[in-house]
Figure 1 (cartoon, rainbow, N blue to C red):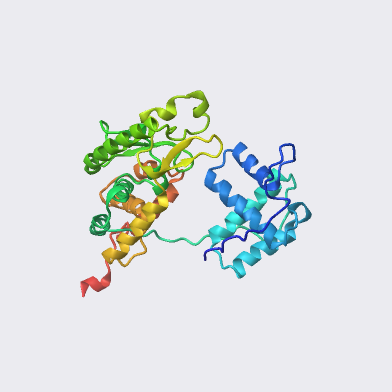
Figure 2 (tube, one colour):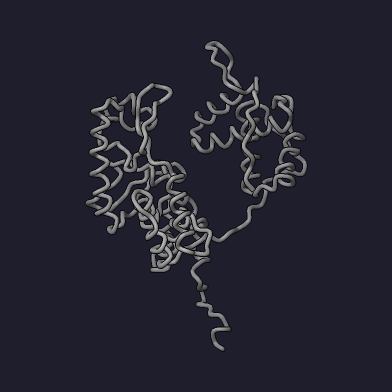
Length: 340
């Protein structure tokens, strides 16, 4: 069940103030601590959201004034009244534990009746080859090219839209995913069928990039501290996004005008619309292309360890989920109804 949008409530002891010489507010401390420990941006946003919900639920009391009973009450509220999933409940638990253990320095003791929720084991939604063709037939432009790469390379939608020019190797038919799943780099195959369209797309993007530089735009934002280490890299073609956004934005920290990469929600909306238009009776999303990539490789005889590397899974047990969707067991089980 989706959580409601958080109200715009002024939290005096949480929100940021413009004063220069002041102690850091709680959410700033959480963000700084997470960045020091190299947590991902998505995890940072999610944890700060749970800290905020925790404080709002307890009527703006500061977390220092609360402890195990308040956390237990909050988690019970999520499970019984909000009907959140087990993974959502566990994320909330880990976010509040991070707050107390690593930010406030007040580790929580044994919380009576509270333990990580048991996650249900769900099978992924897999598209057949014909269904993949039907969905691709309903897509145009950048969403279609992204869908081909997600299915042909096993990319997450976030990995696909954030590709840079230097990550695509046409000679080796290879894509390098930088800081992908688990903040690890990996190499995946570049589908040969996508090469002509991708080359034409990059030709158009290069012309747009040259016009942007002539207009005074800064170029793509650089990861980590490379903006300082390589001052000219932002204007270098190889560092630009493969799928740039249609609009430019002004970077709040520097004031530079830049062009961000194509937003993943635009691809998600296009894929959802194409699935509905095709009449496929499955709840297929962008992630279904990645699931289909792994399953079809397994069906064609690829080794499970190879698929694990291509998907970026740390544990082969995560990849083993695809052995349950092959429509055949290890003994080649056949339904007795087929013998009638």
